[in-house]
Image (tube, rainbow, N blue to C red; front, side, top):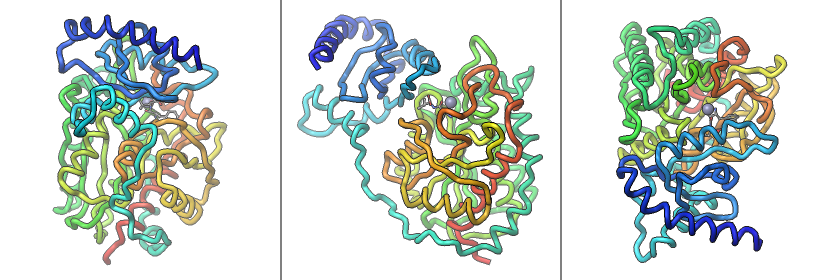
Length: 417
Ligand code: BES
Ligand code: ZN
């Protein structure tokens, strides 16, 4: 305890001196406010200032070099995993509760991450039963593992002219977003669907790659969200194919979209297909998407996150359900969907931190879920490196997640005919 205090005061001393430095060196637009586990912050040099810290998490202000350092630190796979970080710059800048001093403001803000409030927003009215077996089974027949493989081959192709990376801050990243959007628009046209709309959501001012949102159906009832993140880390020192993280989830989502769009089926509720930007930079894209849904008062019943669906450790076909930062009932329903439709083993595992975009929805009070490729720790060891290629991925594992996503969409969006 004593040691901790000593460290804190030393830290804040260091901070005082670097505050002025940071202000001089970094223009406001370059400032990032980050929530990170203390064990990760401990690995940073001096390019940050602490705004507040709790037992487990710390709120810091840093600059792009600090973000790079955080990424490097978190990618050092250590014996005791430390967890990722969230970029909360936008939320912090908008956080001005009345009557708080600056340090209380930081403490109260950080509290929202250590003790997230569940404001039962959009509480699902669905009782999570299996109701549309005929329709689901009809669509499952049209899932084509080869489609996923072909799309992923293109999406993770780092050769000239394709995507050396899909980094949120690069032109390659913008190109990847454009490719996804155009692919859906072409698909809608080819299937004469006039009820498919697409739009982009800007990722603040820091990252040029937007998130891509597709709405299937014209209804404005509470919808069903299925998404994954399209971005990779940047390829400044090595190529970033991001085949598993998260090309696999992105192309699994694409297969669900293709299945739905070509089905001719209509639904009572809209289905939103989303590819998030800047997940790797601290869930940045998804936090803007969630904010956009809230601003536009778009209601959402249920969220499915697909991030890493391709690596079946030792050919184990099990689908693993992440149990933290998710809704318990929806996660239990995923188990029923796997048993009914996918018919592979299903088990539970924990990330231990806000490891993907489901956490952005969950934090905002939405009902989210996250099925995953392997038990946490037995997942693809090559992610975030130039070796995150398709070589170690399984076509059938990805197809199983596409089945789960399709069953999720059909059961929850409710076919009308
Ligand atoms: N796909 C990973 C998340 C992941 C990795 C989940 C391994 C389970 C096992 C995601 O793209 C990622 O890298 N997340 C970051 C945290 C994020 C908030 C920056 C991470 O896990 O370090
Ligand atoms: Zn990642």
